[in-house]
Length: 146
Image 1 (cartoon, rainbow, N blue to C red):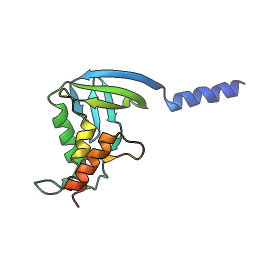
Image 2 (cartoon, helix red, strand yellow):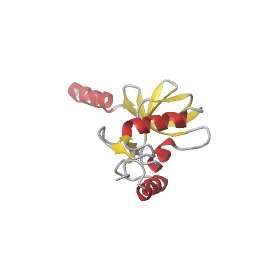
Image 3 (cartoon, one colour):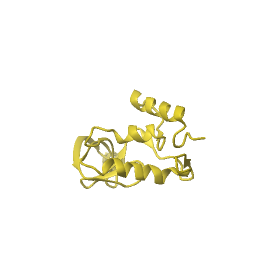
Image 4 (tube, rainbow, N blue to C red):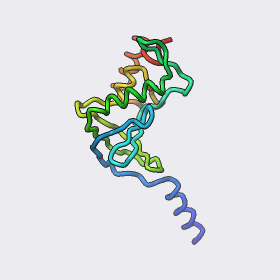
């Protein structure tokens, strides 16, 4: 019985506790192509992922590393502040998965998908994310620049 309790306790610790959807608002800084630091937490934008480190994104100035372009674009979106994020799930080490909105109501994940600077994660995406990806592909923006 003690062994079973120890295994269950270890599983709970390793799995990480779920986070009741908690909202944080404040000045935000980009900490990578899909991560914002806000109010002492790092929020990884839900539904998106950074392209491969070697991926190049098309722009008016030519091709540039997508991760750099995405980080700069995320920083520009967050700069006017404040940004509000909803923590959906704890990822560990101070990271949370969540959705964010800038002060003008922009969803940074959707905006970066529309620019072709982030890739959609596999799975059930919101329709607005699928539409943003389709727009980027049709316009050959970012990673879809061919």
